[in-house]
Image 1 (cartoon, rainbow, N blue to C red):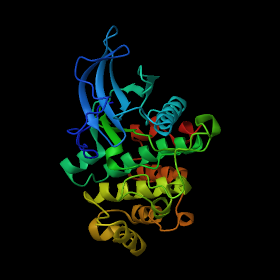
Image 2: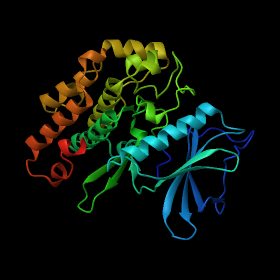
Image 3: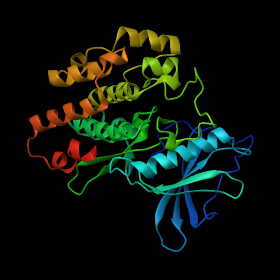
Image 4: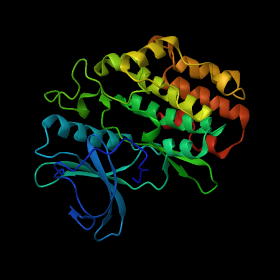
Length: 320
């Protein structure tokens, strides 16, 4: 899974390097590390090559400077079991899941050649009508996750990889289900809680109001809100919410986003209506992710009735 370095800022490793800080040439299982791709708050992501099969992969290792906690190990297990269950073209593919000699877990995933959605906007500004295509693909992928009892809880531009098809059309992959909320008992160990009441999870600027208050209570409508922020930002080519504190952020949310038509007059009224419904302050006033996917599909069909992209991933087929 190749990711742009435009994601979360890299924490300083000058004081005490993590035990999972591998250098190029190091061997993890059957894989030889080739480079460090990114460092996040909970994991390090490496590019690697299978020592016998010459298969390029991405390896996500739990970031820790000592023995990993049971909570953090459970999060990795949850992510692995979820990715293994989903197996959807719009979600990064899991290849393997195992542990280091000290018990530190790691995931082996497909290596994605592309750019994050964040980098795409930084390079291009507004994505125009491509915003609808990308948002619809994200909605379909996350709707599938919802049907399997999983809430992503950290949808943001940096967690979407954009690849390119042979004809130049964008193809997205949702990544990083590390803080996902899993509703199915088969996915998690109830004896190892991973989200406490009142815990803050996610990225400010993309969080639904209810998730800011209590991540444990977030449901699928929180993901809808996050996608609404992303769609708004794809259309206008810049940030939607800018705040110096959580209190200021909450005040901005209550006020509501600026009318989309003020910043992007070219956007059809149907799109503006959908975006603002996704950004409703109350989750009961937002559509479901399936409804969002269906609406975006209809918008695409109205604009380009016979595009190959729409025929490749019809909504009904991906939810079966």
